Image (cartoon, rainbow, N blue to C red; front, top):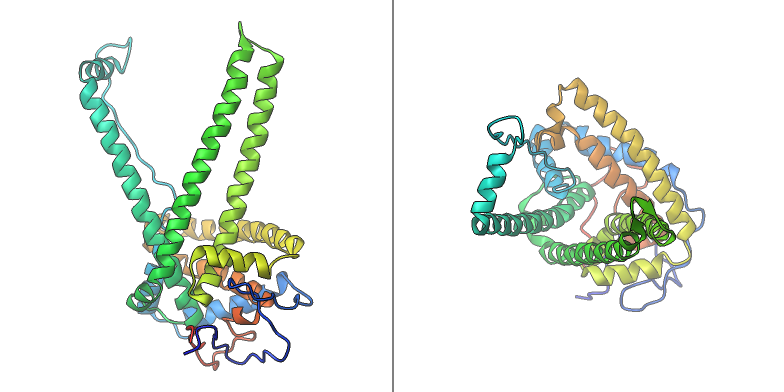
Amino acid sequence: MDSDHIENRGYDRGPGHDFGRADGARVPDPPAGVTIVNWITPAMIWTRLVLFKPFDIVKWLALGFCAWLATLGQKGFNFNLNIPSGRGSGNPFGDVEAWMRNNADLVIAIVVTLVLLGIALALLVTWLSSRGRFMFVDNIVHNRAEVKQPWREYREQGNSLFFFRVFFWMASALTLLLLGGASALMIVPGVRNGSLEAVAIVGIVFAVVAFILWLVTVTVVSFILEDFVLPIMYVRRCRCTEAWREFRAVFAGHSSTLILYFLFKIVLGFVVGLLAGTIACLLCCIAVLPYIGTVLMLPFLVFGKSYSLYFMQQFHPDYRLLPLNPRPSDPMPESRELR
């Protein structure tokens, strides 16, 4: 079978289309009349078809499991530690400090163990969420709730996404550490007798500007990875680096459109967040429970992913994964397997 062909139901490629690919082929003609807002209605209709036409509690539970995997690690963990206080009112942590000084080797071993366990847990969560993201996208595209099939089918892509995310966050953490060190080298020597010298002020300004730029970069890369690179990996069955190359080829020259889309998604996310928060309050905070909360929030999660898939399909015919005018009578989308 020809590995460069992807089945695209109902789309006439027509003559003269040389699609942008990771293999260096020419990018397609720029899309005419790219729209951002108009995809809200199709995304809402598709969400209704996936979740409510008909309503199937088993489908909700299975699809909710995939969504839960996909969103692992996106919510913080809250720990409430109650440390017994020491005797007397002078130092409530006196006994703890004394015990730590007398058992320094044990304390170091405990800290190292906890750090290693934390790293292992973070890697596990990142791996599961990387695999789960492809499961969630596949089920939305095909309007189904499979677990085993997409888990096996997109194993290579999920693992590639996992390695990229680990490398990216390690590079981001190292960059932040270097920026913090450079800032400290300017700030610390400039603090004398409680006053700030000029070099310290420069260091503070540098630290603030550098952190903002770092945060914007991390946010934008994560945004592109989730909304564009991941769907390209899904369509092409390729590795993450190859999908990044195709993204640069296909979306070159559309920076202003992507910025508007990014800003609109921030506003859309704020509105959806308010609605989700209201529902969580009405449900007496049941919606914050792991997995159960994800199942209850499925309409928002399916809508968000459907909207990004609808927006993306304007830029390349191979990205047409969802019907333009979804109706209950529409056939299920056919597989986009490479053939």
